[in-house]
Length: 247
Image 1: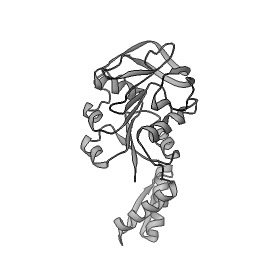
Image 2 (image 1 turned 120 degrees about the vertical axis):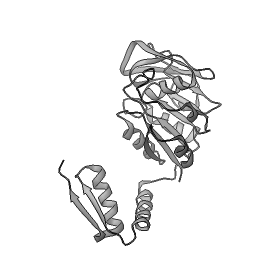
Image 3 (image 1 turned 60 degrees about the vertical axis):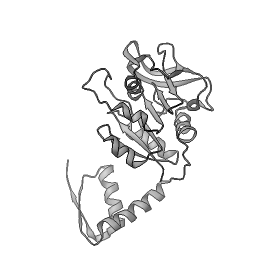
Image 4 (image 1 turned 180 degrees about the horizontal axis):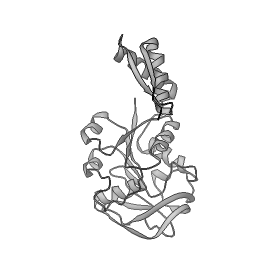
């Protein structure tokens, strides 16, 4: 099954990014930025998306990753903090922005696979206090705003793309098309994943993994534990005991 990795750097939209990818019929899974590079290599992802985050990349206490991830031959899309992180890892210059952009901003873009079938000017959602002052060597600017000279950049030789704005939110006028372009034009996904097949596959794996053993599940009533309970119940039935944990 083709998979996209959403590598989480502490952004509030990590789940939303994964949801948008799945809406485009491609399976996405979220892993923290502490995930070892070898594990990422082993999973053979079709593409990697770096999430946003509230930190500054030049603060060394902020979430970072080894720059080797940009050399494993897998297409990468950086969003907001992820965009700045790509620049920082590849040798570009990130600074505190003289003007912080927040909200709906008009973006002007040049030709790029990331912006296929999108008008030259469109509205995007910005939320940043840092910006890319100088892109890394080998990267070209493909998007600008009045206050952000590098609102998007690319290295087509390495299939690495970065957007300072948030394509995953509905406020970005053609945000879903940006993600679609990354998935299909850049990563070469086929789009043969649907939620029903995920449920069936997951239940089959649970049946094989659990066998005739019993399962105890701490159930808070939230979405995550309730979905886990639903899948386990379908897989093993009365072998499952749920314990309500009142948080």
